[in-house]
Image 1 (cartoon, rainbow, N blue to C red):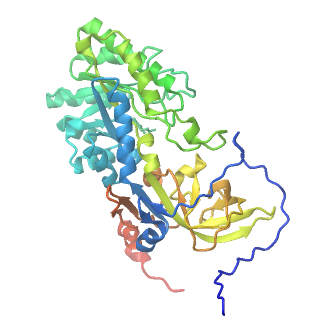
Image 2 (image 1 turned 30 degrees about the vertical axis):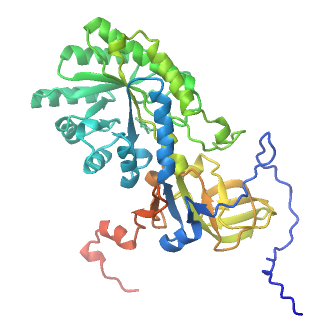
Image 3 (image 1 turned 180 degrees about the horizontal axis):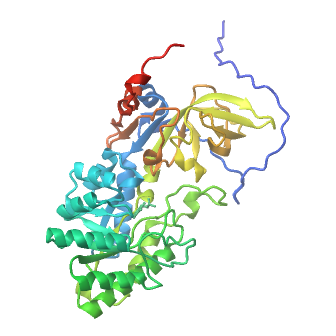
Length: 458
Ligand SMILES: *Cc1c(COP(=O)(O)O)cnc(C)c1O
């Protein structure tokens, strides 16, 4: 009888003597990140890459919807009037924005480009919140014509807007952005008008007394990746106090308080002792302190303002994955294993701030080792992970980087390489291409080569 034993040949790894490196430990022991992730919402990683190339961004529509519903529930169960506005700069792929719009989110934009993008996606003008310090006269004119909510950042903008209002004989709907001490430092006092030194109250008085603009709201966006719900309690309290002062002095109602965004996602900040899922507050934590501050501020029942939230990162980070492939393995001069991937900080900008969780996308042996993960750029700062505990992976094998849905698809750069495709997996598990891979033609299209530079001889 012939017994056939089929076994894949073991991979040979050159033996090395290595110095022990102290990895980042948490109190539960060393980080273990070696469960394979072979599928995303029922789609095999290998087949997604085969179809759309590597690297590849993948977005789970299901995760967006469940995360959004969780956030909405946290606020709706505590407060009668809540409105979310999707922060375009966090991820402005049209497919992603429209999932939020389908769930009832307005648009929150911080530039003329984003404003036009929202209009083009058929967001009604009166449901676009226009933030940011740089709004041109043309952009402000467009926003007035579309009855958008213009959040004033500085006095120069206030005066420009007033001039436009006079010229057009219209009364645009505005809010002012207020910055304040919430106990979080450094303070984001470069945006808007300061609460403590009286600038905010001064701007409010100027707007109401000049009577050319309708002051409908008060806005604060106190920071990003905020781990402290109590800071939002302070912000909500100070905005409420201003609104009540407006009522008492002018007999006018402030229709909404906009508490901005900034809630932390479940990512792990570099150098933090515990992992993100253990440290990030829940939507309930944020909702509880914000709502408590507003309902206890002294509004009468029929004058409770609408509560607007512009949260971005916390709603989309976990829904995004980056799939990539191993280019090469090598040993550094100190003996550490290094793995070079086909994606780097060019498309994974958030690798500068986070220790992204990275999972192999296929089975592997359970030997793991501290690994430096590099991107493919010819730049020393192109480090995806400084120290990850990973099994050896062969050239061509795949990994899944978790929680990349926020800011990477807007801050990515076209440096050395073209940007990859983005696929969204729908509620039934069907993948849809939502952004095509860039091509050389896309880049060439923008370039203009002067006639006299066309020809050369080498
Ligand atoms: C960036 C930004 C947001 C969203 O911030 P996240 O940290 O992604 O939640 C909301 N509002 C304003 C004004 C912003 O600039």
